Length: 152
Image (cartoon, rainbow, N blue to C red; front, side, top):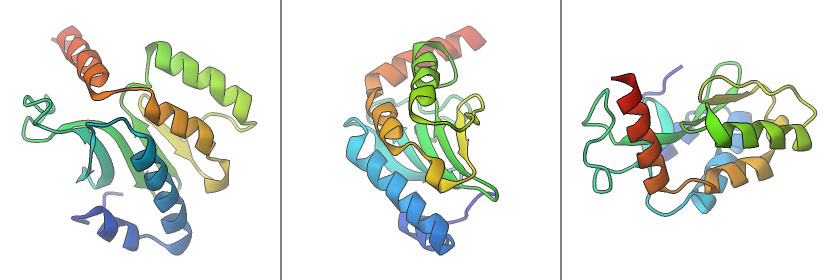
């Protein structure tokens, strides 16, 4: 369910009160803990944190006019979605899965780059904070470029 909101505040105001509260909390944690260089935007109908064109002029390979996405937050019909573009494989994935087992008794509901939370109370906020703070823009750009080269 994609929002047509043009700003983050507009997006948040459009949510039901219970979702608004958890999304504001997640947003605040991301803003406070994401490494310098990422920018907050509305992207693909979600709250996004991107590598801006001034740091990565090439933009996103599927649409170079878009800045390179990194993290997105979305309130979907049946869950809260937390997208992290580097979590689908490798060391960061393995670290996250291992840490999840230490902080949560819930089954991890995770796709390639999406972690889904059906109950907002089940979000391990301290683990999300740690995840958000782990990758700097230059590290994401390097990993992204390697990934795009492999696909060619």
